[in-house]
Length: 390
Image (cartoon, rainbow, N blue to C red; front, side):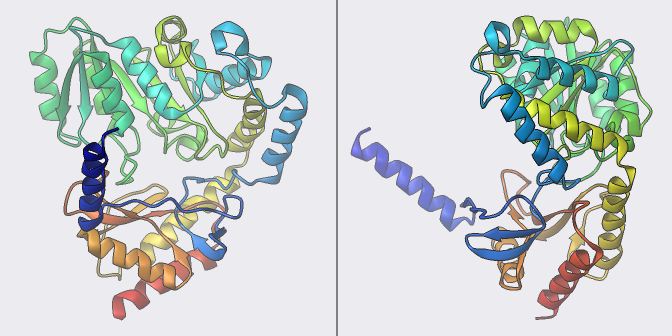
């Protein structure tokens, strides 16, 4: 690369630093857990999506060891060549039965949620079709829409009247409504019953990204179960590296949708399958998600405790019933300063800035887990109050 091109990259990076947009990787010296060790320093962490505390759960870790002994370290090939193992197949059957987005649903697993959404949107929509997406959707839904080469129509967050009008005006032969179920930086839940009604009215498919609802809502079955919804129009994506504690993702849907993904989705066909040891561990994690209701109750008790205490703080707390509790600060510098002040007191709460959130709404994203104790939550509240009074 010419020196002038390197210089332009360096200038662009300097501008990001000046605008308070530089991001830094934090290196953990411990497993994922509330009492983490970061670059050698113990911190009480509210930074992870490990909502049920399964990432370092002894039973899940033991299952990963068993899986490695049974299946080895890697899959060695794509699913359609030689990488689809019995552990993958068993996990897919279990996920389809557990989530059950429609009668007779099947499931297919992916190495990451990003790949799953790219696969889902690009396989179901193409040139001449239309994808309708909430403006606060995760980047992978947006990227899937762009890669599909369909007409990409974005609507204001939860503006169903606008969505209804745009769907009515569209002459696309196939329409997809794509939405986060739980919005990852706001914590609010999409109006899925109303979105499904619009899909039915306009003969559209509804793609639901439940990365942050699976395992947490609907007795663990996710956001569809939270609303008691089931429909052949729904293509449901859930991730397995958040509440499930391990890695990967899945799509559960009508068999025709799942078979379309297997046959045509490039992010599925042209990548090596996830290690089957992870599928083996996920079967144990899924059993805990399904059967351990007290674990989920601890998470929801922690959410309620945090929200009750945070009402006295001077910053805006968004209206979120989920494990994602955003404290909106405003400017990038202010959010960074608040995160630094908490870290000086031994707490790790990440500052989230544009383009992940709209300009002027930089925030702390408090992520709560069933592994957090009431004392952990109180320590965070006390630290926030101390910073506010400083």
